[in-house]
Amino acid sequence: MKRFTGLVLGFVFLTMLFCNSSFAVGLTLESFTISPKEQMAELVYTLTTAADGSFPTEVLAPGITGQLKWFYLDMILVDPGSPSPTSLYDIKIRDAYTVDILGGNGDDRSATEGEQILPKVSGSEGDRLITTGLKIEMTGNSVNGAIIKIVLIFIKGE
Image (cartoon, rainbow, N blue to C red; front, side):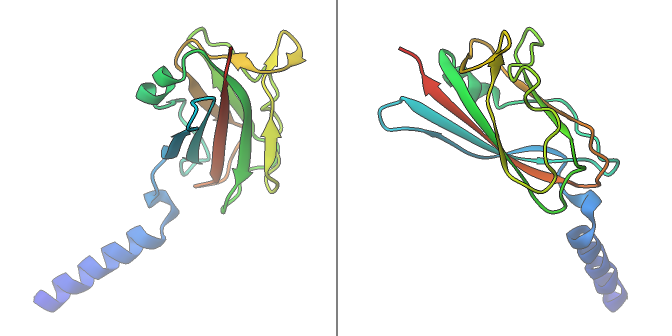
């Protein structure tokens, strides 16, 4: 009986280890760094999609984004991992007013290449003032457990 229990537990462990659906779906905060003179900040996340390729709208760490009030979003870097997402997936960063602060620049991302995305304000690319919490959305993906590293870079206004 002990041997059978050990085999079952071993099978369960291996299934969890190698099955894509066992990975956490959503955002995982990797790091939050503010420069020594508090002029720049960097948030690094890993985004993981669900078994059907979907991704729930996620709030970016509220305690951290509160510290970024009055900073400007300077750019976002996206780096597809393995498994990579569907080609031409879309990323949106929304404020509390549901405005996509990337202004559509997060649409049609590459499934294989890292890219930088600049915010768009009233049709022009440029830094975007952060005054509220932020949420991230991803659409247009159908890959089970797709992984994308997302780096948000903020600068302090004067």
